[in-house]
Image (cartoon, rainbow, N blue to C red):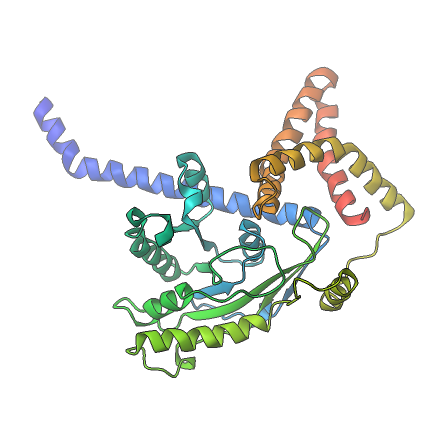
Amino acid sequence: MENEYSGAFTGKAYFKTLNNFTNQKNTLHTLFYYFSRFLVRLALPVYLKKLCVVNFDKLPKRTPMLLASNHPDSFFDAVVIGSVLDKPIHTLTRGDVFKKPAVAFWLRQINLIPVFRGSEGRQYLKNHDNTAQESHNALKAGDSVVVFSEGVCVNEWRLRPLGKGTARMAHQIWFSDDALPDMKVIPTGVNYEHFRGPGKRVMLRFGKEISQDDILTSPLEYEKWLREFNEILTVRMNNEILTLPADLPKDEHTKELNAFFENCTVPERGNALFRAIGWLGRTIHKPLYSFFEKKAAKLTARSVFYDSVLFGLLMYLYPLTVLLLSVILGIFAGWQAGLILFFALPLLAWFCGRYYK
């Protein structure tokens, strides 16, 4: 009887159990992704002074999209892009941040795909095919893929020389055995007023799409094809990106920024009552914000990851902090007081971001 049961389990029952486990894992993954996107859409209006999106209505419908973006502000670039798209996005990200298992697990839950470079060790080169296949599978499933075409992240206002990674991906997606000829490459520009903390305007611009037929070189002439693709992509990305020389005087820098964001207007600060509520929200939240700010600075040494880590800490831990404080108040002052605090704190944070600049 025992042998019969074991044999059944290692056959159909085993695979049924394995499939159930995989489906449950995928379901939890999906739920966490959409929960994270929900938090992003709640938090961004508080964190940013204003997010303006240009040419969103011109994005292709019902076709796979490979969004080729600049990369001035680390993971926060993907947060901004993903917040406005209805489809889930999968983002190609430098592979060294996946080396710690706990970090890698979290990053995987929000659809980040590791990209390892040869400089990080020959043992990682075998993962290039896995990266390409994951991206291909995401596009086939109807999702969008974001690739940072510069290959590196630098806090600056210009497009750096493009690597060949985006061109290679496009070539493979368009001309492999499992090709997706209707896939579109979308030149994307993420533009910031500054790169340190909240209170900034951000302009997300989508450029003219690149189709398979836009490249005149034969795909059989691989290197020449890659060069032509990059030439077209560079021109179209530059059309969507603010370019400011690093040695530009401060006054000229501010003038150019204001001119670029001229149509990204910030709402009026409201009446005196709303500004007073905003001031109250800032005063109450200042100790909590200072804690997260110092923590982010310590974790990142104020590197290019600072903005992303600060926003991530606030997005995930602030709701938990509000819940904990509400429960504690509810225990000592009654559930009505706890419930009021639970709704009042986020509302005050919103008033602070909206009316107290």
